[in-house]
Length: 330
Image (cartoon, rainbow, N blue to C red; front, side):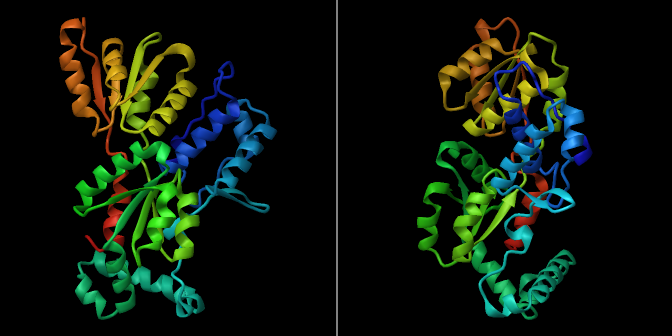
């Protein structure tokens, strides 16, 4: 999938080229187009692709490293960093610290048993401490995102509650430390955009953090690439953060060729203006009913109804399956 990643830099944009490149790489990592362990293109390769100076690309890579998304390996290159449970983060136990490879073997063996149809009760007899830990962690699942982008958290909670069929608690990242002080166990879930911050808070408290991969929007980006120049594209979401990233990605892809309007679903004024102007509207599943309602309410004022495209789940299917397995739910 990584081979599908393409970078588009608008040199005449008000948005700095380094910001455009940073956001595009960050999106590729968050959507797992660049999975953990993937080697990023060299500065020379990216310079040839984007036309940017290698110093600019090096600066972007340093910024990504500062966020904890990538790591530099001397003489080898820049690699996407494994996060949270992916990196084998271990609970604070002398035995587990003494035998880290044995701990990994227990995890691998348990996953294989579950995949073969073994129940948790059957596996419990063989791996009692591991099963007990998973069951305790599944008793409380917290989704965390920064307060400024609480809409993304609401979207994640809606999807996880529907797919996992368990209650999920939404916690602003700024309050996560306080909440974890009051709980003995649990699992923190967040997107790769915020994994570094969440891990820094949860790891000292021996609470695991599982990063989820977001949908890569390949289908939507292909549609946007084919839109005729001077058309109006509308983007609607629960999340202000998703809208900001979407606007930058569309701008990097098409520049000033498209007029882009965005609205949080809770902003009825912007939403109503958007449905009256856009020829194509892309929204998330949580926003779809409200967008349909706004289009229906404005039908008498519309010469032609906009084409409405509803995206797949914000959280990727592989991440849902990972969570089910880690929480002992399937």
